[in-house]
Length: 400
Image 1: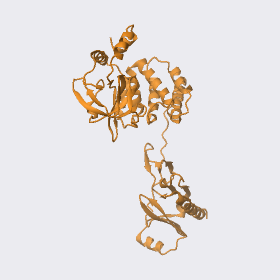
Image 2: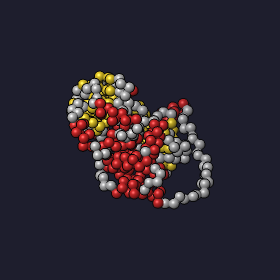
Image 3: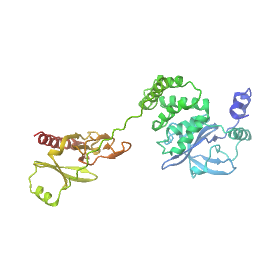
Image 4: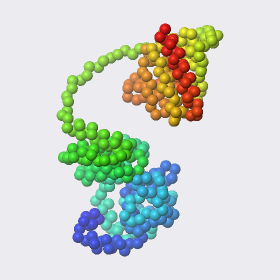
């Protein structure tokens, strides 16, 4: 009989009395986390006693090896990298930062104890449970949801999915409980990086009431924005797919368009010397990759740096995405749109991008593009005003 079956039996009262006599601290490890810059964190429920920050502890391994250590930090499993607790009490699920222990030292099923020897009945019951390969599906769901945040490889993510699918109804209940806890704000930062994968996994469980489970996620009231976008909206999409019959479509006819050939607008030395002798209508600079580059509006076109010249006859449109006041160092982008450079830039976090030829990944937009930024908020208005002048002047030229 394993521990959990034992607790469900009629002997729970006598067992509880036995456990209450155990005053020393012990925790069964069910997961291991590496806190960057801090060390190894073991995760599990405190099964007996309590332990404080800087107390001596022992890692008792399944093979009988005992390693001395010390508690360097205590955290809740909702904030694994924030060690603010001073004590871990019985019944709590916590993370313990251990001195001198590396990730490879610890395995699921090992113990952290305040003494070098565990009570015989505790060791016996938990060893039996370990042999039965009891799986903490909730912990697996948590790890899978954080997989992008914690840089977990795709092969390990697939393995976690397979473990959950093999767990059937118990695993599905753990996933639902975990996602609802996310809506309550009970999980650590970063769960939203891959929580939608958990939602999509629901429909892969055989013979389950998917509609009911997805509806529970949709109807759950939460003011957490990440729950709305990474759980609720994904569940709504999954429910629509569940209710909609599959649509069989004819294979699309691939339309092949020959892109305009890129024009080399690098000028010759003679042309550069000629332009240097001409007085520009307007002159300014823009900033890219730590370098200030000149931007001159000439009589017949735009001179970028001292080598790239774009005639007004080639320019179809001028686009200026202003520098954001609250993020001046992230910059703005001025683009002279031509037939061979038709795509407009898209503001994507700190820079400006366009789809590459495959349309799958992204590459930085640099052709006909002037990236312009400043370091200080007080400069932003002037920088934006200068670029507006450039835009207006070039637009007046291409309309004539």
